[in-house]
Each structure stands twice: as structure tokens, then as C-alpha cells.
Image 1 (cartoon, rainbow, N blue to C red):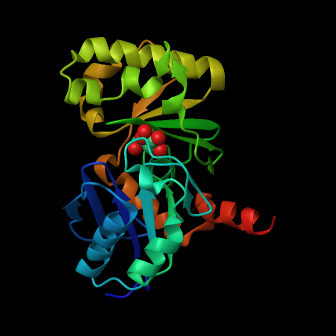
Image 2 (tube, rainbow, N blue to C red):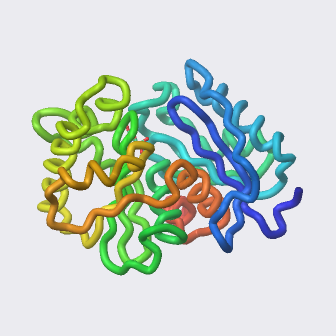
Length: 262
Ligand code: BGC
């Protein structure tokens, strides 16, 4: 397979690393994604080897975008809330490019999902400030203003109720700790109302695996700003990563340029 028309994205998650070629016109995966469990510990070298396995699985040759659950500036990772601490300070772009032999760009996983939803999903063509939140093990966030990503917002780590917001309202409380869905949804509502006061978004996009229960969840949110469920669900990270792999509009490359030009 060549990269003449397709693009390629990989999404590094806490439990699985998934990748697939993507059609840049439709934003759809052109074939079933390939998933490999995240190595434990999820050190940079172990994750890079797994990303390489996925690239090789598709015999992919061409640019690759990789989404990771961390702050990424100019390819360098600077936080590690839900991956191995060894990532902090790692030049992920350099490591992954060297391991795969391809030109790799790296960005935050929620930012990738945000780009994907704005380009192909529920937020396509919506003007103003869109805040996408991914509810999973942690809370990821993407802020997009008039189609432009403001990267690395990390709204899941705002202090809320005396703790990290993601410790108060991540979906793991339901999925792993068996919190009642209504209790959790009301917590999410409180958090969204807080974000409303701080950011005044025009739209919230509600993402993460738990969004498949959005019909129930939304009845308990009680938020003035419109909240809609993400559309691309599990594939948003792959699709957004693939776009960032080739597209400076994603914000990832632009940041690196501004750094390099300093
Ligand atoms: C991380 C973010 C990430 C989110 C979702 C948070 O704990 O700090 O960078 O986007 O989890 O994976």
C-alpha cells in the first residue's frame, strides 16, 4: 500500500494502541483498524516498538500521525498522567520517526479527536468555540476556535472540588469503580457548568467510549450550552492523528515551527 491518497494514524491509549489507514476525503478508516494491547510498562521504547508493528502490519510507507495521552509541544512529551513517567521529556517525534523509518508527527489524543470531529464529525462547520471532552480513564480536552485547534488545553487537570477534575468526573468511575450513571452524570454536569463559566463555549462535544450512553447521560447534565455526543467515537483519535500527520492545520506542526524559529 502506498500513501499516495490515504493517510495513516495511530492512537496510543492506556490499554490499547490502534492504527489504520484513513481516507482523507471521507475521514473513514479504509480497513479494519489493527489493535495491540499497550505494553506494560508503557515506556517510550516499548510503545514505539508497538507503533512500528502497527505501521508494518499495513506495510505502510508515508507520513504517520500518532496521538498520545499527554501534552506534546513540538514533538516533545511533557506530562504523563496515564502513561509511563519515562515519557516526560521524550522527543516522541524523533523516537517514533527513527523507530518506524517514517516521518511522524505527534499530538495529544484529545486534540486529535477534536480535529477529527471538527473536520468530519458532529462539529463540522460549527463556528465559534467548541470544547470537546473525552471521558475515559482520564478526561481529555480539545478547544477549537473557528476551526483552529488551541492545543494542549488539559481541562481534565483543572482543580475542581479540591482535586483534579478527572479524578472527580472521568468515566473510569463508572466503568471501573461502578459509580451509578446518574450520580456520575450529575458530576459531569457540575464540571461542564464550571467550564461554561470559565470559557463560555458555543458547543460541548461529549466523547469517549461512555458517550454510547449519551441519551441517558444528557438528561442529567443540566447545562445551558448545547452538548452533543461525539460521532467518530473509538476512531476519532486515529482519524485526527492521521490528519495531523499530513496537515499543518492541526496545530502540531505549527507549534514545532514556532519553536524552531525562536
Ligand atoms: C491526560 C491528557 C489526555 C487525557 C485523555 C489525561 O490524563 O493528561 O493529556 O488527553 O488524559 O487520554
